[in-house]
Length: 172
Image (cartoon, rainbow, N blue to C red):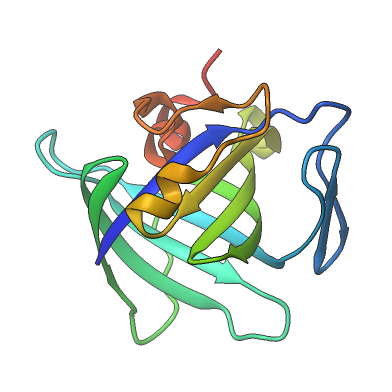
């Protein structure tokens, strides 16, 4: 499946984004938006230097069965290929982990989401490091998106890719 997306480090103007209820996102920039809350754990299995990492994603959403999927992404943002397949049963493998609490909503032809990114730290704790907003959809609609003032576009910055965040941590 082809995907076209842009990514931004989301910078709240006053305080943190707040997941006010299970289906409403309240923050000082976006005001109030109806959204779907997803709890995501991505585990990456590093491959040879010339290959993209294999991702096992676990997605939990209230009122739905937990979904597991494998995927590999090839190419470079913003326009790349994603190959996905769903295993017949739940799987777990040791890898490099990243946790995301995602607020996701539809905007016209596009899907936008804000991820609260959390990474494992020393001692087994998981800490939030920042927020990344992505918009995905048709090229013209995605390119027409204007982010709020102060947000940093990181679409082509490899430091903010999920695998890099899982393997190297949040950029400083």
